[in-house]
Image 1: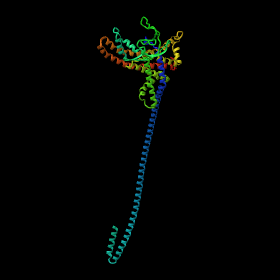
Image 2: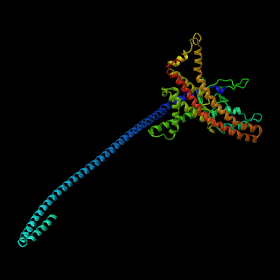
Image 3: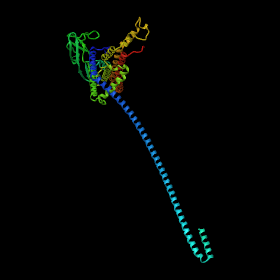
Image 4: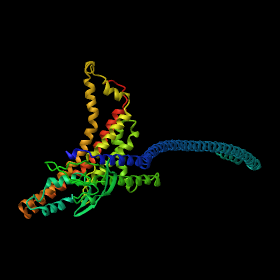
Length: 164
Length: 342
């Protein structure tokens, strides 16, 4: 039974010691420790939250970048396409002008040739006339000597002229 | 625990016809409070402080009384101090001393262990708190990092779920009892320092239980008292004319600190007794069948003692946890907001 009987002395010392340790620890240990723990937990929570926000911002930024990049790519393609079209158009235009010019040149050349030809023909006609005159002259001169020969000659000359 | 060999040697010196080794005495001697600390053959005297209406307050070394002789009108037997004055020691037919007993405020072994425990606590936690101040915003280090998980455990696993949102008010007390019980229990398990049994002392356990009790009473809200005085949700005839519910609730109310006290006291004391019993077996066999038997049993005994010791290490923290948890639950019931009838 003695084991179960609390002694007065111990009750006194325990009460005193416990109150002292409670007050001292509350004042010098627990308040500081608990506050520090809470502060740190808050800090960690805040840091995690801000990290999450930064991540979201990053991904937003990345999405923006990608969008921008895609737009740029599209624009580049557009520009390239336009340039190609323009090139083709220029080329086609050039071809058209060139062929027109060619045609024009050809037609001018043809006209020139016609002109030259006509000139040459008229020259030939003139010469033929002169030659005819010469022949006629010669025939006329010969007629004076031989009438039959004269006629043969004229016939021969005429034959020659006709074949020409 | 080291007192065994000394006491056994003592017993064999005293008388041949007496039983040389009395395990019960040795164990009780260890478990009970003492006015000296015994480390092997060394007896460290402790201060005796007495108050009696005849001689007032007095303080002297326990070595003055330890030899069975009266000093200054006082006489000590079986760690009990009697006031005999100048007269002879008078005994009744059972051999008990018939004399007045002064109030004993001595710094006994348990009180010394108590001071040791609180000194250790103050050192550890004030140092840890300093760590938080010095290394503000940094990772914990040293004592700080040892204590932090335990403090967080008490806060998050005991206080928060048991008490609810008003837990912060009770946290200093809960932390103090948790660490006091745990460190006190561990102190009792350290061998070769005289075998303290601080938390296994009923007075120590009782004071803590009473603290819990009074804090519960002080913080009890209207709903808590109504629950005891006029329990809601039970038929009226259980309350009037015969207040059966009140009696039941009141018994529950009063039994809480008693149960807290007994659980801690019995668990810790029983642990000590079991380990000592195993060790005592060696000496019992040694005395009964000679040194060979003693040696043979010692192998088994030591193995069992080590096993029990490991269990005691677990019990040390478990009892601290249970005491703290129950205190927290009592506080929780005192401050709980009842928005539903039950």
